[in-house]
Image (cartoon, rainbow, N blue to C red; front, top):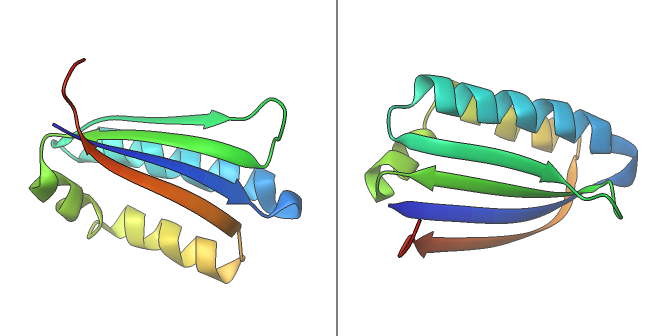
Length: 98
């Protein structure tokens, strides 16, 4: 299993928009992608414009397929159109327990 953990710093004035769009993306991923096992979104209590995304896929092929879905493309377009993200850290891993 593949894990993808992303810490996103949204533009402070756009944090609520980011929250809405990423919640839609996560729900669509879990509902429509057989290889997506989990997609969790957390919002920082101390810094409400910081989000943690924890995604789990069967394998790299499932993650690659995720990035080609219409809902993922729509999410990426929204991020660019509304200039939602000012920074992010990405960690791709292989799940060794859990």
